[in-house]
Each structure stands twice: as C-alpha cells, then as structure tokens.
Length: 202
Ligand code: URA
Image (cartoon, rainbow, N blue to C red; front, side):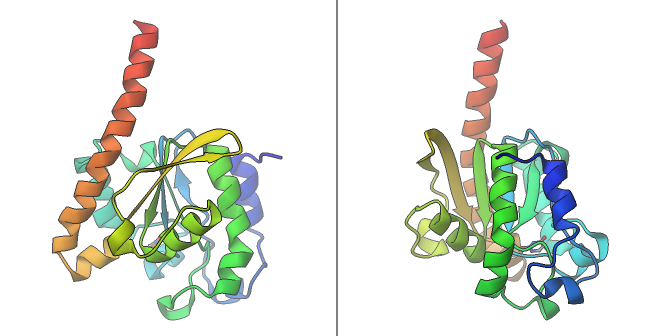
C-alpha cells in the first residue's frame, strides 16, 4: 500500500520505534516538494535541525541549499530533503543499526510516495544504507560517489547517486567542488525530463 507524504509525516510525529524520541526536541520528518524530481537523503538531524524540526538548516544545510540553487538552478521548495533517521542522535553520534532499522520503513515509504527521478545519498551512512536496501553494490563513498546508477525496482526504473555529505566540505573545502561536480550530473536528468515535457506540449 502506498501512503501519502502527509500520512507518513503524521506517523513519524508519533513514532516511538526506538529510544531517540526521548532525547530529541523535535522530530525531523523531511520537507519539500511532494512531486520533486530530486530527493536528497542525509544521515540524521543535527542540533539546529532538532531545534527547528526541519532537515538541513544548520551550516551543512546552508551549503546544501546554496549548491541546490547555484548548480541545479532549483530552490529547496523544488526538491525533497530528508534523512535516514528522523530524530537527532545525542551529541550527533553515528546512527546505530537498530535505530536505522527502526526508522528505515518511513524512508522507503517517502521514496515511494515522492517517486523522484533521482535519489541523492548525502554521505557514506546514507549511501551504504540506501544502496544496500536497493541491492546496489557499495564499497566506499570515495569510490562510488558521482555515478548515476539505474536500478529496476518492482518493474520501475529508479536512479540513485551518492556524493559526499555537505558537512564534509565544511571541514575539507576542496570537497565542495567534488559535490558540485556530482550535482552537475543531475542537471542532465532534470533537463531530459523537462525536454520531454516541452516536446509533449509543443
Ligand atoms: N546532517 C544531516 O545528515 N542531516 C541534516 O538534516 C543535517 C545535517
């Protein structure tokens, strides 16, 4: 059964599938366009996200937003942004496997509901978990980033790409260019779709 984004968010806002709901301030279900062509998936909310209940609004989020605008020519409202975990792990520690397992069904439903042209995994945790679920080989973010992968999922073609987490570019500024280079490959997917729509209406 396919759920609407509203139904999924309602469920997340009542979630007690793991213990992170106890320490969090706000659930961070995700936000953006329900018909987005591109869906970005990070790791887990940080301090700022936990305060605001919104994904990627801290420093890493500001960098992500600026790259969405400058490289893709889109705004945050055009894309959908969420995380593997919907609650902040205390002190931003890495997500535990049991927390990922507890939260992952929400993400699968979000992907089904949005049905984007491309799922972009931000960082190694996101890439590992998503690639594993969709049975796409994954060795490391360094080796596997920047490649558009097509996968047949239940008879439907889905596309995935992994890139570095924007937070990594805050610590190592040269990575910003690498992420931008990866994002540029996404513009081809967006343009292809727009051209099809244009051809259809002209
Ligand atoms: N890092 C993430 O992975 N997600 C956020 O929402 C913010 C920072």
